[in-house]
Length: 115
Length: 147
Image (cartoon, rainbow over all chains, first blue to last red; front, side):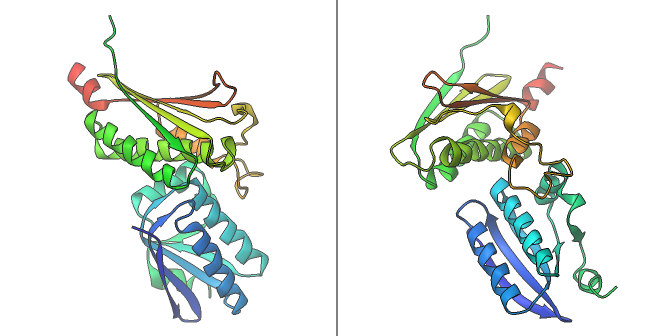
């Protein structure tokens, strides 16, 4: 399934619901454009809801890292929500768990920006 | 005497579509070899990463160059070769993306994932000077039957 996303605003935080694959040429470019668009619009608190993401390759992981760096460089924060086992395993193997603030509950993820 | 493997060879153009195509063939070979669902995914991702490397870095996205993928299916394991027509690379030159200085970098995750998901992994220099990724996965079904 190709990459799709829907953006919502919850308590002043942008939540991006994603589904499909984040791979080279299939999601990674769209993700980059989406984050740039949100930052340009002044949204600096972003949650990526990965519940519907069933596949990420190393390029997709690189895009998550690049998004993290981009948001951080603008003084914002990027957090991850609802990782399935495959994505969670990828973050463990690559040690990206040490970089990202990862949540399994949306309310807690949103509240964490205000704590 | 070791049994002769079933051998499947595919030759791909250097196209982005070739990555998913090779991954799909890898998963089908893994299914035929009796690998469980978790290993089918790992083998598919390893093939995806190797062909993506060949597409981007080896063949530098030049369509006329070829990517050769060979699957050798033995009763106890699957061996995969992915060869490009580039100038090769040394594993020692690939940064470890898990270190503090590289964790926010852009390089090394593909090799790391192939290493993590396969039992054996190496990069050789092919006869034409390109990179030849060689990796293998033992079939747990065969191991459990033998024990």
